Image (cartoon, rainbow, N blue to C red; front, side):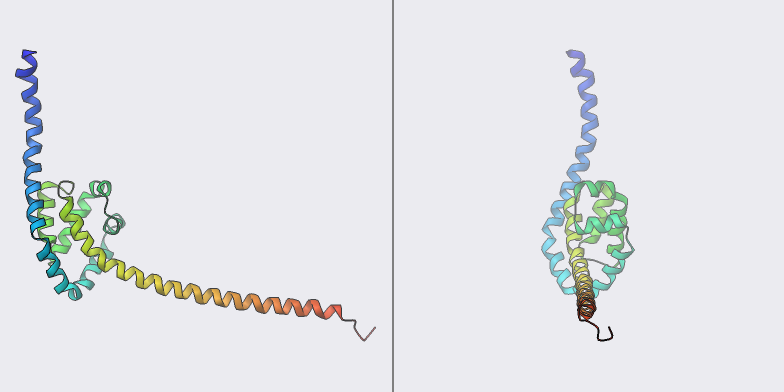
Amino acid sequence: MGYWKSTVVPKFKKIFEKNTTKKTAAIEACKSFDDAKEEYSKEFEEKKTELQTKVIEIYEASATEIKALVKEPKDASLKKNSTGVTKFLEELSKIEFPGSKPAHEACSKFGPTLVQGPIFFVFEKVSTFIVVEEKETTSSKDKDVAVEEEKKEEVAVETEAKAAEEVAAPAEPSKDC
């Protein structure tokens, strides 16, 4: 028992203490980000119109995994696509997207899994632009589909009318006989 306490336990402590300092720093970064969320939200509302086109360009240029993560943020996806998330945040910080710079810095230092709160906050703001864009395209697609369905129904009605005329015509006796 003495050997265990003197040799093995200190080695475990060293292993886990390394992670706790990193985690503590990440928690502090998340807290400071949380304190500034209101400022980021206000700044976002002020710059919304000028940021929209830039954000959509960055979003469209990103990988499909990142697009899915922006639409539906999940812990597992964040872990799998950590490099893509870092690059996406870097691109957003280049256009001075509110909150992206501190989120990118924290993500670079501590990794995306330890600073999920700031990353998901930025993704939530980005998704407001994306949802609007997709609703517009789906509504136009719905209109196109509805028009095509109406055309198909008209064609079906016309073919039924022609078929009914053809069926009715042979039923009448011909005068030539």
